[in-house]
Length: 265
Ligand SMILES: N[C@@H](CCC(=O)N[C@@H](CS)C(=O)NCC(=O)O)C(=O)O
Image (cartoon, rainbow, N blue to C red; front, side, top):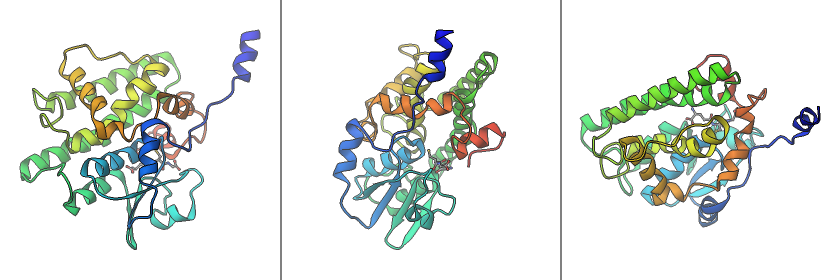
């Protein structure tokens, strides 16, 4: 009985509203006013995609931490749906992480993540679509599943969708197109980071088998300096995702969409 009482009393962990570790240092470096503003939250993987792109390209920007569940007016003005990431460039604003990554690419500043070859670009867009449509929704299905059989089913599907991407990647790697990080890697990186920090503790997600193509990819993402610069300490992710792992009501628009069998918002 005591253990049930303890469980009932267990304090619910909430999402964080301030970056920690290396990500906090980056936030501080980018706190000054700039014509390019990224509205984001420290725990959000969709934001992290855009944030990594800015860091990789070394484009000057201002990082503005917002709580997307409080939906401040400054965010709603850019994105009436109140989702982050949102980008403001001068008087113009836009949202949707993939669209924003393409926008930064089109600015033509810093390194290019898509390159110039039309066929390579089309291939990257194809696999970016696979990440958005088939990998990410299965990440949430897996973390939100409560019954053991549903979790096992979701784990298989999630892994299968990842392996399709691994099979489509350059054979040597370690990144999707070869030795350099590019668009598809950045699209996937935030969820790769959350395998070890979220799916492992909450669902027992296994470490990749050493020496495999998949293991080398994960290692390369974890070791990239610009990915690291946008990553908080492990506790921030563990706490922020407890509400997904418990599938608490009204966790987020993403969680609702998954529970209702819809695509990502
Ligand atoms: N499809 C969007 C998804 C963005 C998204 O769902 N962001 C979450 C935070 S990780 C959010 O803003 N949630 C607010 C809410 O659920 O109301 C994108 O790629 O930018």
